[in-house]
Amino acid sequence: MKNDNRVNYIRIIATILIIVSTLYLLTRLMMPKYDIGVIEGALVAEYYDEVKGHDLIFIGDCEVYDNFSPAVLWQDYGINSYIRGSAQQLIWQSYYLLEDTLYHEKPPVVIFNVLALMYNEPQREAYNRMSLEGMRWTPAKIRAINASMMESEHFLDYVFPLLRYHSRWKELSSADFTRMFKKDKVSHNGFFINIGVKPAINVPEGRILANYNFGAKAMEYLDKMTALCLENGIELILVKAPSLYPYWYDEWEEQVKVYAKANGLKYINFLELIDETGLDFMTDTYNAGLHLNLTGAEKITHYLGEFLLNNTSLADRRGEADLATRWEEKLLLYNREIERLSAGLDVE
Image (cartoon, rainbow, N blue to C red; front, top):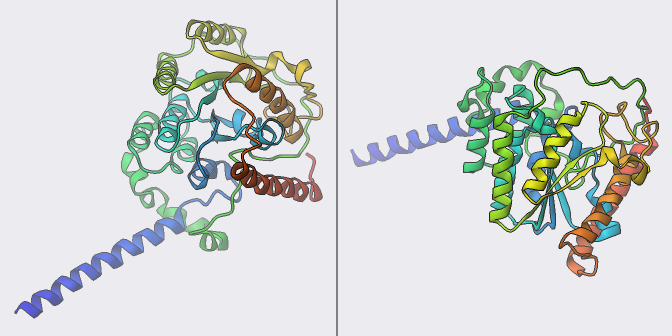
């Protein structure tokens, strides 16, 4: 009888393991891989494989991962930085990504791009998933999901992604099988290189809004971000990247300036620094002024590097052997990627 019971237990355990393993493999197969096609969904997860101890963490939407180059910050200023950006990253997602970052390291400086203040409610499930699915499971991720879900979304779909992606079998390609466990990196310390050129011509003016005040939820999370940085001895710097669209209203600018002054924060609006940075929107954007290309990103990163060394506690760390060696390899990959893209340049 005892032997029969033992056999039954073994069978039950084996069955459970087979079911769990099958579900795990199916989940890995069905989930979007993001290292090809819509690569923005891969950015958040890549952070966890990095050696920590960054001087500077960027958080925010496409205006950070398209517009600032950590490679330039290191090569020319000795600043070790990483961009925790994602497509249409909402401010509460930025806040929880900052919380998540603090589980791993405590950077002296954090930069937040203020465009996200224009959104006071979740926008689209696809963007939520690109920001949230790459996060590791912590209380910060749970809170981020709860703050971000659209009415049509369900928390369990994030816990068990197969519930959401089970019908994706119709779209599967060979890449879904070969990249189940190992995906190519798409960024360079969170920066996405784009060398295309599409001049900013006929950029639309902003439409008249019924209300120019930032929403209560957006401002609540900016307060929380400010408080979290203060608590942890982190200097929070606000920036507005020099994207020409979405339109940045004077009324929005004034609210950010007032907030920064009231809270003792530095604020850089790169839209006001076109001449100082040398930006040329005929050559320095890959999509007509929405985002900068590589030459544009490197120009404003040079301005930022000078600003950081002259106005914050950050110092040039290029004399640190281990860090310099690590960055030597990163710069090699960065320059190889630029060469590869240049060899197949497709100017739109």
